Image (cartoon, rainbow, N blue to C red):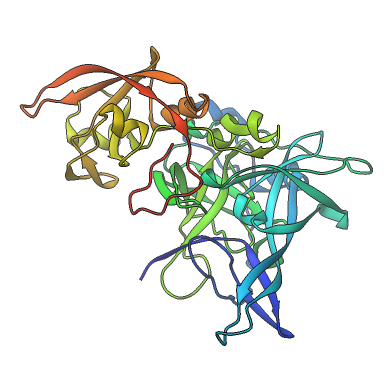
Length: 403
């Protein structure tokens, strides 16, 4: 049975005994035996993306360049729990979660996963050579599993990582992950982008779209660390793994929140507070070659798979798919509207739609242009006005919207 988990590494002190667990929205993750694998490579890893051909670096060169900017994040977590004996009321349990993060600005700004610092009463950050400082959580977005930390810079030499463009990632592109699995700080693993447009569930139940799948081994403690391309640029934030059974270790399927999702929110996150943002209420897929079997009338856009009931999209009449079809990427819901423009701006893919909605404010009214199937093999062009609302705090339905 497959199980998907967020991947911090947590040890909780309970009644004098040490228990390993994961405090995350998607379930528990048991302790795994530590396995240290030596990775050696002398040849450059050349990406399939032509624009990066001239910047292919060896894994060692990327590690030397980026590892100093990867942080070891430790969160002290206090939770209220009920007595296991059914009486005595609530009690407090304290635990420590460890994860990863990376510097994005010389002013001490660090990007990580929200679930790494969720429920934390204290957060510390350490870099190589053992320098540890206390961090403040200044911004968070549970819906996209993102959080921004700020640390004092005095006495530190920070190494901000370069943020890349996740929309340019292609299946087969080489990638590297640097993080702190099982507390083994600044561990490097390598692999490729093994799939695009995956969906994972955020800590508050929302769907995160356009997720990058990789076979680069990531494990508990890698959460919040960077997924890097062959140029050493961050294209994702490592967030979850899929397991093949009851174990908690990697089986070669990991998921990273696309860096473009984070980039679109950083101006808000850095200002502080919880980002709720504008909310449309749809789940979409990028229209590209992987959907060629559907014979869609366009080669780009965002195909609406689901529309959540009661959302702005539903109230405006946007339609999701009503049939299921097999494509190169798996089964998809088909028959829904294809979003081609928003406020006159062309929508190239699902990620672009998410970013554009994220750039709006609750209460904004937008104009969405769609192609709608007529049922007779043709499509009609429709323009739909939608008034966006604030994203709910949480959602726990089976089909969760992207934004």
